[in-house]
Image (cartoon, rainbow over all chains, first blue to last red; front, side, top):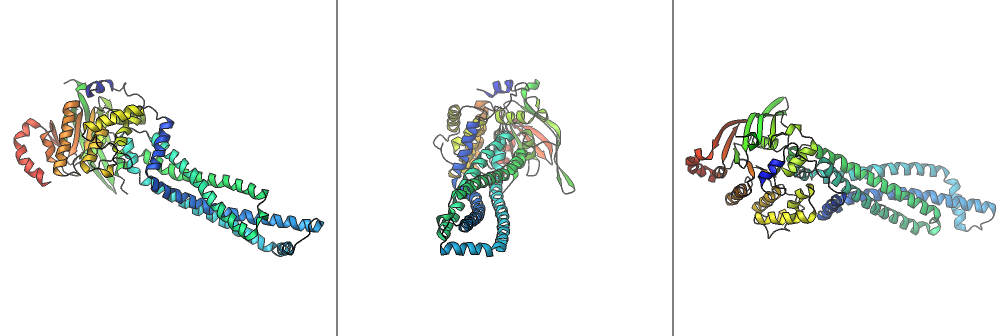
Length: 241
Length: 248
């Protein structure tokens, strides 16, 4: 193929629409990109999963306190109804329930506050690691655009990468936070709080943590990626880190 | 000369940059016609507007006013998709800093434009190997840029620029980061591609070694074309120029 025949067919009319990159190919590139910079990806992922692990652990310990209260309340009712023969430990628990009413309210407030703090820390952590990982790739984005990539394609690649990283890091983060708190509770309170309520709370929190982690990662990646993709390639290439 | 013999034409090209309250004219009315199959060097000191002209011709930056025609198509009339198509198929870019994707192997770098062009993976790889052989890197297909010397990286970049059979190769200071001999090799490679493949080469440079292979030399100063010279007119002076070239 000579340049001459090319030039002739590439008049105004010959400027065909850019062929869309198939999703399978985009996924392949995005995964390759995560794989090739594996350790960088691990560090980025660490930012996400530590944030989510912290968030999960705070929420989970809150759930445990609530479950425990319910368990003790149930015991109190059972004792009052005469269906449970109380052990000394049960009596101690029920008594503390009565005296701790005011404390419990304060503890609940503290927990809410902690949850919010956890969410903020987690947001900042994720935003920071994702912003870094996109910013250091401005030049790459500029180069890709020089090679004929459309803005949408660049964003799509980052979208796939972010969704994947966000989802799996959040799951790992949840498991980490959940496991640590559950083991601590198992050691201190025994098996009585690990009933149905525990599993329901766990599944709900899994959903919430993964949602929070994925959405935050997604936002923190897509916004800078879009900004870079919309720049003229010359400007993106000029950016020095 | 018929109009379609021009591969690139610029008309009253102006590019302004605003720095604080000052407006700097990096390009100040550039009119340039490039013929098909030409090897043209844009010479000038740094800050003269070479790179700005490069970016404007390559569609990497929008000029403030004036137009760039590539194969008689006004680039300002193109939408984002058509512009991407143009960058993908019609123009190949070579940069001073090579701009390879660091995490990809030589072959993957060369194959990337074929992916954007919608070529199948097998065809793309075949094309990539063919091109890397052409630039003399057939033995280093699976090396990452960090495992290659500067000259080798620039060869990969040249192979990449050819991936989709462009009619124009735009080179911005292609020898700027290379030593004298490596630079010479790269210039010879570009000249060979120009001769054998008939690809038009437009190179912004201040490397005087480039004079030897160029069909025409465009001298830029302060955002304007100072003069355009045919090589045959300056042949006599090359000897003395090369002395200066060595000092670079």
